[in-house]
Image 1 (spheres, rainbow over the protein chains, first blue to last red):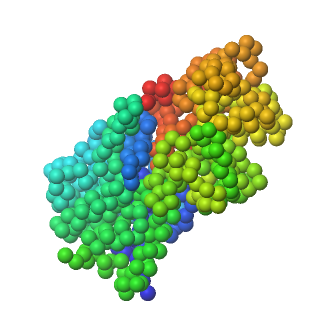
Image 2: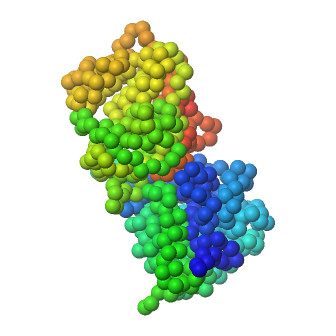
Image 3: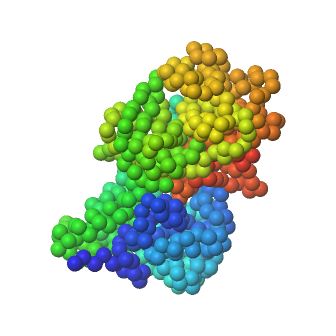
Length: 303
Length: 261
């Protein structure tokens, strides 16, 4: 018998297939399209201290096997998140992780402080990798020294499970991962989107109003696998892997290079049943291989 | 809302457009004019993002979708044969409020005819006869479809090339009406057309609803991708897929809407 439960840095997950930040709302939007309660968990859309309007449209552009987005952290702010979104997220009966973003260090700290002690939230995912804002986001995640500093300060005010979400757009992602761990991260999430750009050749204008955006979808999957592999080599912390996962094979790849769990993002737009398909595929695969738990696949790549 | 594999029952070609008739009883029963479906285009290696299509008609367990061939997604659709299956999600979004006036004008540009055709059908069922204004770039764009609609509705055609109906834009045609016959306006079409229409009827103080388009990802209100700027003290956006696609004229921040792209 296969037991799909996994432990992500102390968060007991019913299975290793979660929904990535930013694509799934509170999950209620998808309730008529899939059994949300069967998922391993949901990572919320980024929460900032104050309401954030986001970037002007167009915010979306489809690319070969992927998409560019530049939402710009649109969200209702912490207060409304706690009042409106959190109860909706919790209604599914599965683990909830809050993605925390900020435009300044103080904002990150204040949100983390306010989420500390809310037991229903199983952990926070510190978003130091959003490519679509002029301040904050990726600007905190690009240099090891600022990563150590920010993560350590968040660590002081947040006692729950602390995940740090990394950008792939750095020279050495292993170094950034080490910095996050040095700061006190319990686990790492990777990868966020890759900065990208597309141009309309008829009008000579960028496809996105904010010119550049974040590339996601199947196109980035091999890049994400490599990033997870790099990080797994150098840190001894669980990894929540995301980046172009659209089927069980890609989920298994991530486990083999060292991930403990995976999150589905863009693929939910193509097919809302993607995460449940991955779950079934993974279960069948483990049965076929005679493996009792997904954790037994972790880092088992044969070199 | 549901996700179905709908059998394609019939494909009709009208000029550069295609009208698909799909068996989707659940969607057809629930749909109201102005709502849309998200269609997965491509089978073996589908497009990453579904394509939104306003519902052209919904009755007897079928929905009709009108598509102009504009890109890879829509050219895949246009090559489908009867009997094939189409993966779609719907009905989605907020439709038109239908009790706005007993003499409504329905103003369509190009493929924007789709939600207004559905609206016209439902208004006729309620014994309200709308005036349908439909503007095209090229008179031949939609083949025989204008002629067919002309038999069922009070239809005024215009085309920029002058090959069908009056020469010029649909808004110019509307403006030439000295004493407007209508007391409510419903519109769907390209950005420029909506802007010109908004200018034209701004002072008339009529109930005015528009169906807007934006690049869309999730289609269900989760991802915030299809933002439209709304009037508010601070910059704010609504979602075309969930809060729309139908908005009231006064809800939209038009300056930002036209400045935004």
